[in-house]
Image 1 (cartoon, rainbow, N blue to C red):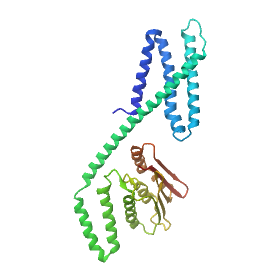
Image 2: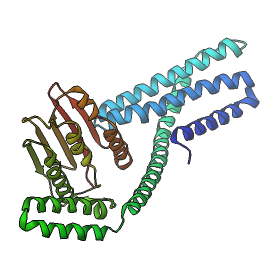
Image 3: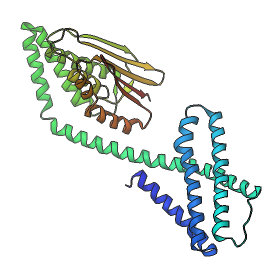
Image 4: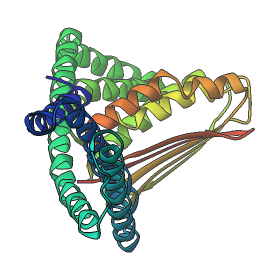
Length: 333
């Protein structure tokens, strides 16, 4: 399937030739070329000025009055400019006797601009349709690949879980702490097998997965870690699996000093109206660790979020001299 950029090029080239060949029989090659180029520039200005700049920046953010004012200015300035350029080109290169721009001509150009403005919404809907179609196809391909990878990794999972359960019962009497860790490892692996292939899981399931992962990671740290995990959301919310894991994994990869007694982690999972936010904070022990924490894992997460939510999510990474902060905001269905 062609990309959106290529599709737009095809559309505009087709429009160019339609305008050009409609003028060519009457006015000739040069006149048709000049008129077509000026008209195309006008159409591009109005359509992309609206759908790429004015509409998302003002109308979608609730600034309706400003949007109307700027649209009117765009149509008037664009229409007048188009009219003067056409008249100037005509009088300079083609007219035997110069003609003057009249008010009715300017009005016609402004009306043509208004019609182009209305057409921009049809253009925007068409682009949105093809973009959603492409995203759906990408998600299906990724889902199929993930399912294939999962099938490759599922070598007798029930045998593995049963073995872990047996080890758990063997260890429970002599070493309850070890038994608890085995149970947490079993829960993590069961999450990978049973939950991660799903399109959505409950927030409560995701939280339990994160808590099990944190508990196992803490084994590797010599000193106790100060962890504050705020959970202020409905446990029944549904979100795609493994969205929150990248932040937590980055903390233990890059934001922990195993020799320090001052490791501190702050996690906050909060429901705000129709959005869910997840913020993590950890200390920076060296700038190299801060740079690494914003690496490939975050890039891959950003790509996945774009496929899932388009531009309706927020993902920011920031670091001060002492703290590294990651923030995610996603819409809820």
